[in-house]
Length: 47
Image (tube, rainbow, N blue to C red; front, side):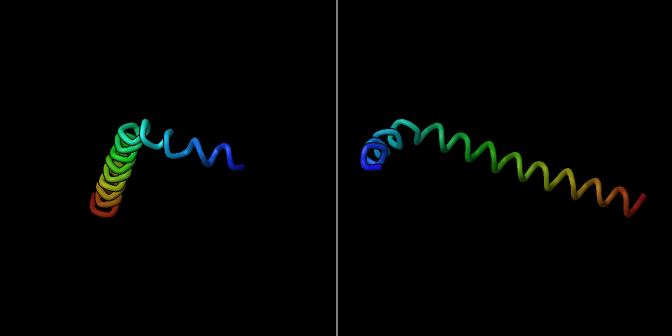
């Protein structure tokens, strides 16, 4: 278990940009999904 722990910081340094991009895409996706669901609910409730 000590070997993977030693490699973690090095891996993290190279993956910072990718992680930020992934997080941004996930946040954008969830926000978009919430907006789409809200619009759909409003259209169903008020035709």
